[in-house]
Amino acid sequence: MKVLGIETSCDETGVAVYDSADGIVAEALYSQIEIHERFGGVVPELASRDHAARLAPMIGNVVAEAGITLRDLDAVAYTAGPGLIGALMVGGSLAASLGYALGIPVIPVHHMEAHLLAAMLEPGPPAFPFLALLVSGGHTQLVAVSGLGDYELLGATLDDAAGEAFDKVARLLELPYPGGPALAKLAESGDPGAYALPRPLLNKGLELSFSGLKTAVLRLLERLGSAARDGGQGAQIRADIAASFQAAVVETLVNKCGLAMRSTGLERLVIAGGVGANRDLRRTLKERGQRDGYAVHYPRPALCTDNGAMIAYAGWCRRATAGTGLPRIEARPRWPLEALEPITSGAS
Ligand SMILES: Nc1ncnc2c1ncn2[C@@H]1O[C@H](COP(=O)(O)OP(=O)(O)OP(=O)(O)O)[C@@H](O)[C@H]1O
Ligand SMILES: [Mg+2]
Image (cartoon, rainbow, N blue to C red):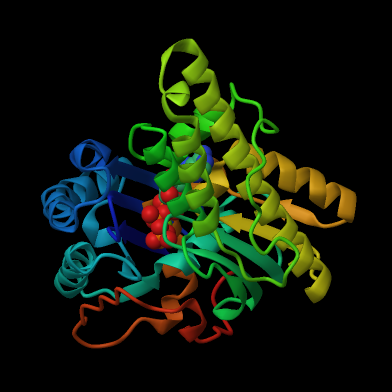
């Protein structure tokens, strides 16, 4: 079975073809960074317009790269939410039109479920059940995954998502957008022990909080004043702040994962979402897993951030849920993961 996947929930246009016999056979990703960077964040209207301009030609190219034609597709999957409403509508409209014209099922996909399943595309995929750490630009959640669609939210951030904190602190440090990767790069030349930054709610249950940490960085920069801005010394101070901030986020996430693994007795931990691309987080979690006796799975960095491959794969897993009759365009800007229903047949 060949499934076309379409991702347009935010500022990346992602397209891929998943073949149930061969895996991902073709994919393309277009990032809108250049469009949004001068605004310091995603401008929803510009995001929608760019998805609308790029999506159809990208689909044509990806299908050709897969060595097939549109007529060879068996289903079309698209991100139905959560995300920016206009951006979701672009992907949903094109997916429904294609499904209608080709007479094939159209499968609405939950973006966070797709992130969570991305690790399945790697060799040696994790078996159910497992704990998932979803760490992205908009979400920070610990989810007990009993099976496909069977999710229990164990804890989540009370305020900012981890990726959002990376992006906001990167802005305070005047790093280019998107901030997460830039901050992680700067942190490589800094001392993670230079500044004692808070680890909010560190040992208190499975809730998380990152807004106090961001404010602590703001106060630190105010206190340091021009010293943090000027010359070579300022550059080193900023690198030290980046490293200290990253260490605080990583320690918090790793501790929460450890708590959740102990309290659930689960044996596998799966990392998903853009912050999962962070090298320090990946290394530290792997070490902690080895020490405490659980396996840690994470997809390669390109499958952590938004992409079409995870949508195509999640669509295949959910093929049994495709509606019949004329396709409806679903776009759900807010859509809790726990609202999904378990699927008894699907992935293999
Ligand atoms: N190496 C990295 N270190 C830290 N953060 C990173 C890294 N790479 C990406 N990020 C962060 O990951 C986020 C983007 O991830 P992703 O594309 O999964 O999020 P999103 O799609 O915007 O949000 P959501 O999936 O919650 O809707 C951004 O906040 C970005 O700064
Ligand atoms: Mg995402």
